[in-house]
Amino acid sequence: MSCGHRPPCPDSDASDVQAAVPVASHPGQGWALLCNGAVQFDDTGMLLPDGHVVAPPNRRTDTGERAA
Image (cartoon, rainbow, N blue to C red; front, side):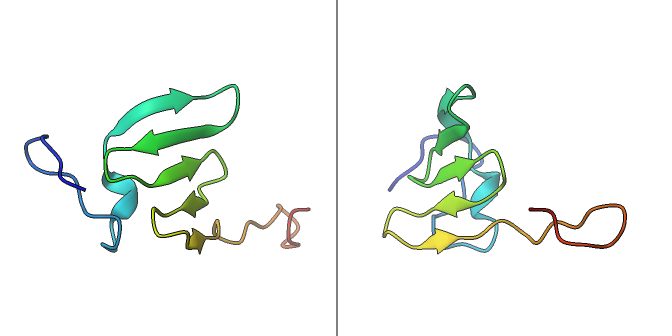
C-alpha cells in the first residue's frame, strides 16, 4: 500500500508498523485503520493486511499478576 504522507508511513511489515497515520478512527468500537492498511486496536493489538495478528504486549497489574 502506498502512502502520500511526508515522511511516508512505515509499511505493514515494518517493525514500526504502529507509527503509521490513522486514516479512520472508531474509538467507540476500539479500533483505527492506519494508512498502511493495518487495524490497530485500543489494547495495542493489531490486525495486519495479510491477516496476521499482532497480540498486545503482556500487561501486568500492580501486584505483578497478569491482568485478565
